[in-house]
Image 1 (cartoon, rainbow, N blue to C red):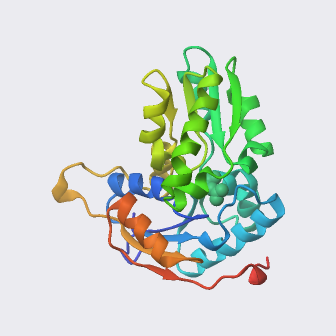
Image 2: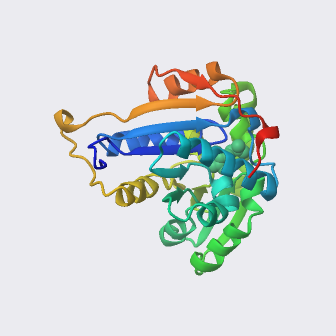
Amino acid sequence: MTDGLRRPARVGIFDSGTGGLSILRHLDSQTSGLRALYLADNRYLPYGDKPTSWLERRAATLTSVLLERGADLVLVACNTATTHTIAALRTRWPDVPFVGVEPGIKPAARLSRNHNVAVMATPATIQSQRLRQLIDEHAGDAEIHLVPCPGLADAIERADDVALSPLLDQTAQRLLATRADTVVLGCTHYPLIADRLAERLGPKVHLIDTAPAVVRRVQHLLGMTPHSRTPTHTEPVQLQVLCTGDAAQIDRALLRWLDTAVHCTHLDLPEATTST
Ligand code: DGL
């Protein structure tokens, strides 16, 4: 958990926006004495309509920023970026520990009782080779229904209820039409509205969020053990937040999803400087 100077380890985290807060809130509740630097690339949200070449360049730029600022581990808190770029990031920085977030095909296939699993994700994640590979390796005898959700991460990011409510209605109808009893939340924005989706899907449909597994992987790589749940032993994550777009919007999301008044700092990181 600490380096030779007894400084807490620093986790660098990036996402297209505030979806990664769905991972960070688990990290906060499960670890003690950790520093986190969260970089929201909200100038370029959504990632879900971007090609692999663009995502690879952008992920490398964001990783460079996090490493320059002292990250000991990089958490790619975005399914779209993970499925399209984490292999290239690991090749470029072989000594850096990377943790990614991928659609939970394996736990969903194990859990489904009617062998019908639906995966909701961004269009880019749905089209990724990595998702096909995960399905080939882990779906077993489960039928996998792919449900791309264009615009959903965007509406969650903007907390735009006028757009969000009908999108959730439509998404729930599409999911129910698959008859899946298990739904994979294949985008880190979706756990933020999981309760609203669950209301629409009813109690017989199980939602899969891989955040707890991701946090266990971070703890393992940093040599941490989950903290005692005794409040006197817990220390909240020391959080610093940067963003490339509207900082006020990120501040509102931090308050809403993490109940924290930490202020986000704007970082000018235009696409033109995205050279690898
Ligand atoms: N939160 C992201 C994911 O997990 C990306 C959403 C987007 O920007 O399209 O896929």
